[in-house]
Image (cartoon, rainbow, N blue to C red; front, side):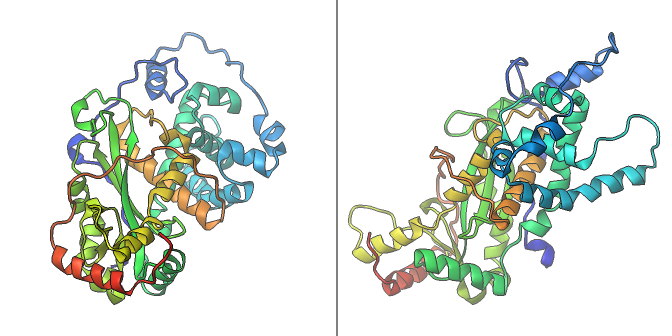
Length: 387
């Protein structure tokens, strides 16, 4: 059952072949359409395009730690750690192919720098090619290769807490929010995307924008322990929850919710024995009910989403990717990077923006009565805090 300790980002198979429209190829957004068209165009001029040379050794390697982090959203030590995780995989792939002709592949460090630059900054491929002295195809393949390699590390870095780890997570939640027995905070967010050319209406969410959904669970230290998504923005949150591993987890509490533990979420999830949500504020809540709501509010997942999107600015406003099948892989790679940075104590300030689309409806309909009884018991036993 160890393979169920993490969840993998999925995409709805009914919509896995969509492509996004990109009408403004001269903008500063990522322009894969331009690159693909460029690669398929006949070669008319084989002269070498003038670009910046020696940018890594002449500029990047001379940055101090904080200057480096401004560009790549992580400290050099964290970068070296990530490079150590994935660099050998690139070398092994080259050795396994046995190809000895053609241009020499660029090294793993350069590929990772290119990928992080594209993930962290609202820059375009043509600008990156000029800085790093690579072709458009090389830049695109570097980003895809890094994304694929990082997303394959999800089983190692995105794991559901169990055993002693779960007990440690619960202790930290209780220490900071006074809420006992919490092994995670659950929530959802939408990643804005450009309008798909196929079935674009399916990706319009409740705010009228095109998006991809993502559901996640995190610890108090905003480490992601479950990531699931890839569905179109119009898909109901309840369906996303039903298809996610967390739905299976609450149905197997002996394995995933030891000693009657629970996760916490907003009121849309509905109360359940293993999902605690705030009391609905009808203006007549008792002091203890207000106290429980106050404790819950201090342990929400919005901080994790905020930090994730603030660090990787490509997903903060609108993800300008055109290959829909690559989006879930890309988002999971960013989730892995998020956890690596947190575990390395490499933090950044969270920008105060509206980073999620609110839930709608009740996502859980079973086990409500039992959940209400448990919540009331917790409410009665809480130490009153300043509300």
